[in-house]
Length: 457
Image (cartoon, rainbow, N blue to C red; front, side, top):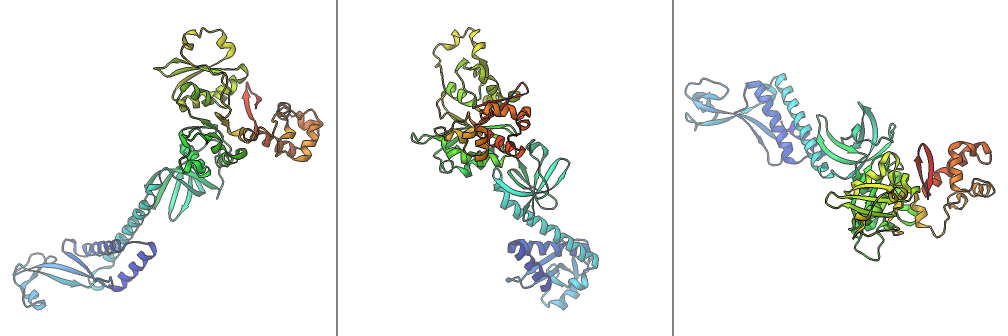
């Protein structure tokens, strides 16, 4: 038996199992074999040496003068041959030799039980290791897709599953692609451990941002709330009690460097970082970023409903594509926000709503920063974003060509890009045009309006 014990002990050491789990596995294995051989394991006794150098199996039998069950009972005459001090009614442990007393079927049953115990013990250890990773980010690699779910290799016999409902609709993965995702659940499977992953959870963006912004890690800046429409936009309300710290600027970083790193991790999804305010009118105005809001009126404080009035030119931006922007603002503020243009508001009687309600003609400059214009906002003193050639990242040769053309104006460039007239003009190659357009999108917000593209600074 020492060979079996040492072999299993060595295996357990390699897998990192405890001594107790090793002993429990061996004991269960031997009892399973014993039961297969004798029909019961109620009288099977397994004894280990203190140093785990050997293990023995005994059959505990009751001494009787006349027996009925030879598996659990032994004749007094036979017991006296083993111990001269035996008396009827005593119990005696009789050593079993598995090599002789266990059949092939019994040994096979024991091995199967040991294999099951090993798997369960290993999964228990993995579960203890990963159970606290709920809400944390893990990185794995795309392996396969089955019925819409993506399976991700995490390592150490741990598998990640990214269900279809937790996948970002604009993302596509190929074999061996890197997958960074949030752990939403940890569960055992028949084979190993499985982590349920999400690429749409707002906390994915929150955790990535916290890695990029030291002020969040040390609690100088606090994320009050975060809402997300995966694939379209995320809104993050930030706050600080430190008067000398700009919470929005801290999260965006110099020339948008910090927020751009986060954007890359979520496939270039737009992010609005905005200032949280206890005043709901200010917070609502900030939440409708990147639109400029003229004023906010509280229409029903009990029902938490408000009216936001925006310049006519900002209406599409405030509503967003298919209403995404205003819906996210509703969720962020936990208010029902009705958006009207200044022209529409002029036709309404707003007198009952304006009493004792502050009016805001403009949003503080640092109240909200749209991710697509983060770099421009951070360096607005140096860059005129109405002109393509003045954007720092534009290729010098391209900038010179545009300066002498009619396409240097951003609005003109974007319109010509979508209409194809810029390509037809022949002043730039397709690669130069595409590269310039990609850079422009980092500095300005491009919004669909009635199936046409509108550029907002």
